[in-house]
Image (cartoon, rainbow, N blue to C red):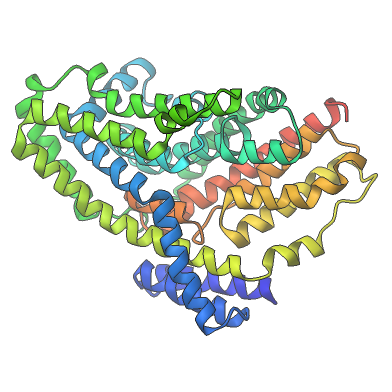
Length: 451
């Protein structure tokens, strides 16, 4: 019954938002209340879970969102993102840009902190979208989805990848090697498949895009930039507030993986501190180039956007917290168990299915991956499939159909300027495609890699 109630809660949230046009914050709280009461969490327990879930998400990503959005707002005012888009378009052309973005985010810039990647990459996607035609925004939104989240489950140092490898006792070098085979191929093929779907008329701008006041103000900023273009710093300098935080975070991750981490490396590589450094750098560049008034306007726009994103993201975390209070993970663990001697394809499909069901129910890729790995680990040694292949299958399953019970979903919707229906297409559908596209690749590896 717990699984049924979770499905009803998620369906109710979608119906309220898409068809009844209820505000997402209200719909998410309604869904959380229903699930908690129906699944036996109790009156007080449900309210406590909603409040604690909101607080935990804010503690985890609140400052990341706030600092990241302000960095994006300042760089947009400086024209840095628009100039970068222009450079990429000149070098690659509009047709290649989505594939380049998805491949680069998956292999060159995989991050433990997918929220940071999304916050920093979303303004770039919005800036480039008009250059790609009517489907520019959904195509680039889909390429961000594929690039960021495929890297998260298949590539070191993605948290999902590290978690699975650690639980299954797979050397990180081996995980990295096979991740390099699966991840970029999956990301590029997913972007291509989504483009074909868009070309068939799948995207409806009037319903799938949401031009918030903050996004509309960016058009005014872009017009104002023409007056101050000569005073803005060179592109390489303007991008430092993005590049420096990414390098700091990568340094911290490498230090931890290589075993030479200490208090200093942890401080330097902390995502909140890294983004704060980026914010200070962007602020200094803006004050120097644009002056105090223009800088204050950009900060104001960023703060307005931040408030909306934080509230929706936090309440999305509340729904996930209520689900966590149910016995859903135990139910799925009892329903599925890997059997010794199962054929290669069946074993891979089972590992994928366990992780996919956990993700659909729980709303967290990393938690689903960890839970699925925990269920399979006890019988891993008796399976006729290489552990690294099982790990990849778990990663693919945990990626499947990220939707409304994930705080990432609501960040994505707000930062990309799409409606809830648009996010279901550019995020939920794309993660579903990526999960399914990766599956046959992993099955082939299951026959090629010795157990």
